[in-house]
Length: 255
Image 1 (cartoon, rainbow, N blue to C red):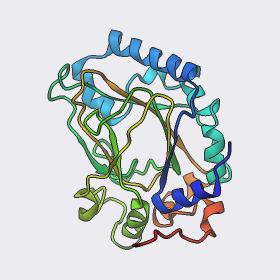
Image 2: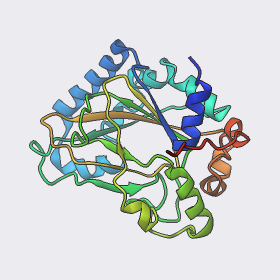
Image 3: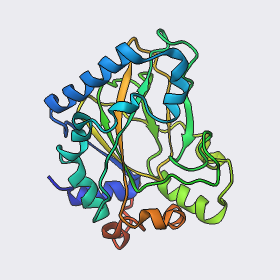
């Protein structure tokens, strides 16, 4: 089912929207079982910091049951609905927030950031940006303390202005101070829920204070022209969204 006009208005205003239950239980279950087996058989505490910066279970990133979470669920159609056209997604990022009770002091909270810009593990002059993040929830996240992703609705406008007027390639700051100080909205949900989030929306990730791992699969989707205009896309939030560029900016009614 394509995005409704109301959903497109929400996305333009907030830079994010959630489709509940978009991934069928059997698809989400197969993917979650793969990751659970990897977690049980292969995860070592010493590897968690590096996995947290890149991806857990890297050998599963191109597994058909993982890619099906995007390609076979309608998520890819929704991405195309927003971007007009997309590059083929060939791999997923698997992100796990491990329980602190099981792995204490190895996975601190991630600060506010925009993916692929001034990453601590990369040369600050290197950009690994994209257009749209598609996130699939693969474990119950009922509280902000479950290792939830926190994002700032509307933050894509703030970030585009910062990239346009204050930031330059090579800076190590990932976000401006006023963004860094915000906590953001916690993404709560159940397996099969899907987040569509503009690349420019700043986000962080909290600590997992539960007894179980929090699991997400992320797909980085790009407009076909994005790789040749990464800097321009940081400064113009709708460059990769031609169908939204001409639409009026939704406003929030004030009481």
